[in-house]
Length: 87
Image (cartoon, rainbow, N blue to C red; front, side, top):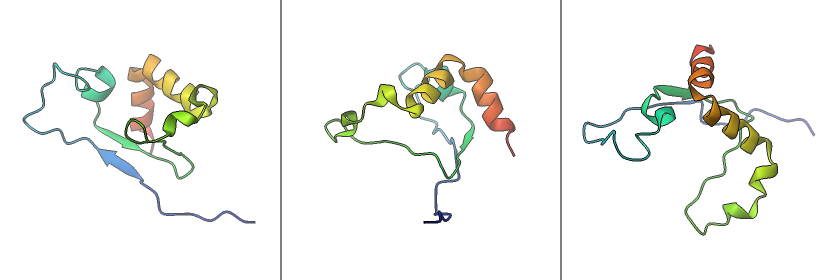
């Protein structure tokens, strides 16, 4: 079975409003506060949901997503720069 391209979120641009309190979470987290934009690859999967939605059923610590996220958060200035340099 051949894989085909699917519609996906290609990028996001951070447009924070004037009412953002930069001293409050999550805006006081440097990875968020310094965010300008993020580009995504079609093969990236995100698990999102409200509390109780069941996303914790996934053994997240055992996934590549966890390793990538942990690496990004531990080295966010360098990783963010790398992301923004991609064409």
